[in-house]
Image 1: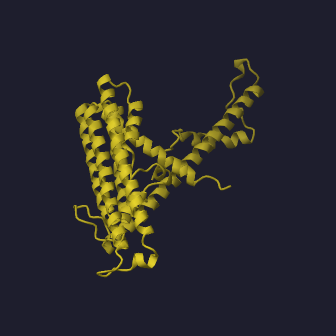
Image 2 (image 1 turned 90 degrees about the horizontal axis):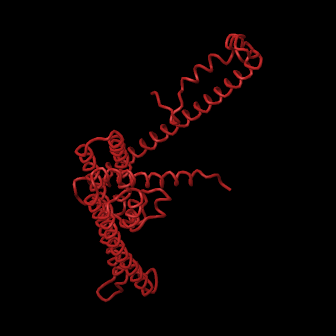
Length: 333
């Protein structure tokens, strides 16, 4: 397979330099030096030619290295994708796959949430292709109807991943809360298993200029509304955490917490589990808020602005993933 050089360097330079370099390495430069009628000494001109060829050889060498690194990166990505495919097949065979038909996950022990990570990887790959198509359409100054068709397809895919995520939360809300499918840097910025809508609105307000006065006011109102909803959910999450802490602290011992209570026994463990069940509801409310904000943004912006907004959001999360890769690959001290 022929891979294009990621650096954009013309790889034909490699061939030219490699063909010519042996002659220059042996000192045969007479055929390439300018004629004596130029008025410049052949020796001096030959040195310039040698330097230029040395620079070309170095540029070609760097181009080959970039190409090799790019190919290795693609091969690594293909390997990871193959591994994810194997995990997905294994999850399907074991009956742990999060259903895409709207049914409940088959497993109650967290495997459904783990399978969501596999589904998310597949979704992200397809989502990236859709965004590439959108970017190409924007750069080609496509009409609003063409842009709207791509935007609608992207939003439909967003609804799909939120639905799968909701099913995963029913299997194991803690896996979703911790964002096990995301990169380490992305997890650092998670709020209730996803992004903060108010932070996304700040990003868009700064990246989509110029906006009309009415659009700016609408985004400001939406940001305030989102912040209030986020604060309310955060307070509910803190209240849930505190309630569980108090319940567990009152249990007396781990054995009494884990023991199944009889008619007059200790129901502390059951109470704690029942309270933790509210976490699934909080996660669903947070995702509902995220979807609502995305839909409101789409209503406020023009079609072309909406396309730019989706690209800006994509670029932001891509930079987070790239930062995570740099963090993981940092030299150990």
